[in-house]
Length: 552
Image 1 (cartoon, rainbow, N blue to C red):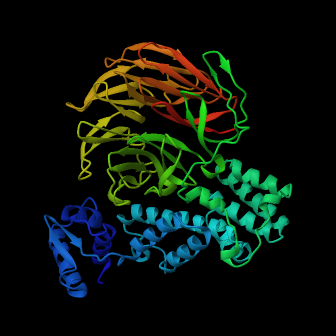
Image 2 (image 1 turned 90 degrees about the vertical axis):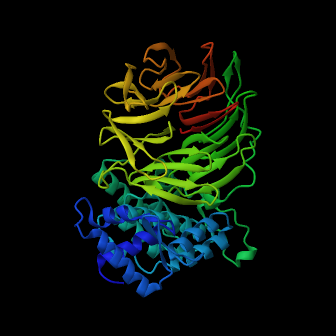
Image 3 (image 1 turned 135 degrees about the vertical axis):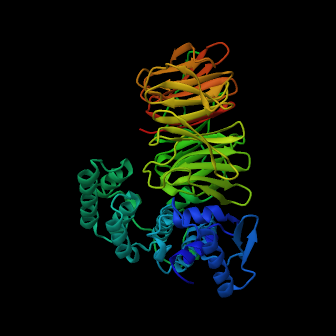
């Protein structure tokens, strides 16, 4: 297939999955900032060579670029991603079989002979993350089928190669324990915990510590299921809670009454650590899911649905009225994903390696952009849509980027010191800055039009009812700001006020340390509080419904 640049061109076309790639982008990716004057002619020559090798009809000239002609299922990457999606909705026996077939397509590491090319860094990170996440899912399925002994050598290798990926260590500990090797399971935990403390100064995650304790206590729920023919096993796999599209939400146990303080009424609660969907009109829990299945959760809304993101369970769409899980998808950047913005038939994702659009109709990523230096460590964070553009925050570059959603071109760069959260409305784009407070960008001039000296640190920003709202967890407050940057009201909601959301004329705030949720009526300023007596994390509101996490 020719030299490295010709192979790079073919790889870039294949990674576009049949979509046209502009010649300018190909030149940019292959040669970087200083392409030779002959770059365009070289591209034409490479395309001609590839047509000779692959057939004249394989590579089409479209507008000012090229597209590769692919038949359905012809690209191994496409087959791998499709098989992974199919396995996500399958029972454990079928899922394990399908994922084995998927990994049979992986004969060596992705882009093996092109990894040192500058353009490949983003794609290599994405593909490596895809393989690792899918491996975690496969191992969960195989563990649920009682294949722990066979998995030990491979998990030992993965845990050693990826010492900071705690899920592999958890799976290794479980496989060792189920094989009668309790001492080895505990030794593996100690090695992994020591590595985390020494290298990163971090303690093991709560789920990892909990597994160690369960092993020490010989928790009977850790014992393996009886092995036998798959059709005779009554499997209810743990991994299915992570990825299986549940037809109905978990029913609320009779004992799971709620501790609510609202209008002076109090009710006892026994809700534990979990994700909860609450009807605030009557105080009833519609659905709940174990926190261990959604580690590091974050909730948002879009298109009339809740979206629940987590490191362990991808991105999950939930019906607010029934709690039914409608679909799950793997974020395009895996665990390197930062935030998501559902808009119409798309979800836009920001991450360490760029910006991506996932199409909900075709269930695949249809666009990827890198509007910043690819070696930037943190990537893009806050994201908003407005004035016909996408707006994204680049914390390390100290700027907000205005991006054309169709082409990915950067239309404007607005300097903002350490921008994090973005929200569109109330006269422009609002940005939280670590040093400047709350800023409004006028989209007609791409310049700062107002500054609100909201007390720092600002945890998050939302727009609603003609005002912009910002929370401060240290002060336990929510600030209400008009379009001119004037703070018109400050509400004390509770210690650890964070994760604001706005719906149906009300601001909702999760008071982490207070263990409560507070709503503020934007018109009257009336506060209403739901108390749970447990530490709370993420929350989002949608009409009368609120989804939130009880984290401790």
